[in-house]
Image (cartoon, rainbow, N blue to C red; front, side):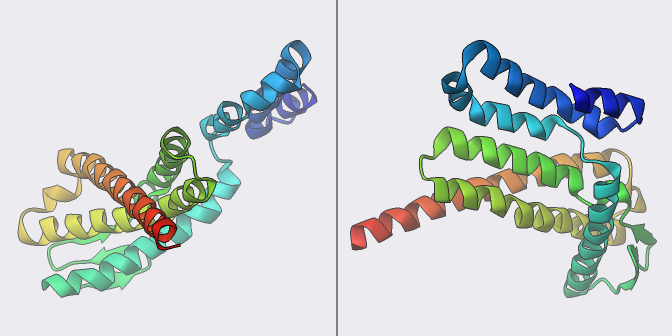
Length: 203
């Protein structure tokens, strides 16, 4: 409750939001006891994913992600015959400059995929080590998938039409690449399970 009050008085929205989760924690213990709280620990902890990342932290993460996605795309596009000149987060193509804006950094896909990986591991896997690996693997998968989206956009801009960098094609590619990243996560889970099963049979 104190976090909520101080957050409201100081106009610090993150503290106000996160205080609700700790309030639920305290109320559950007060009315149901520690045993029920332990049983509900995972769904309670999962609530942290509903809290938006503070702007201060988000800005520190977004810019490096923008630059990383730009570097990966600029390194891959010449392999498909597209000459590239990168200036920061702007990829200059012969057809038009392609800017990797803040919205294209992949931070939202990264958070969403991490949340889904945590939930997927909890619901489908008993091994804690595999759950942890799935959650951690969501980060490089999201980064690679976002880079593939930028590469695909660059190829469409160069060989089809500049309109592919905005509007329907841009939005649709985001959904498509997110589905691809989910498929990569599922395939990784299968590989981890097979590797674990093979190790057990080998021993």
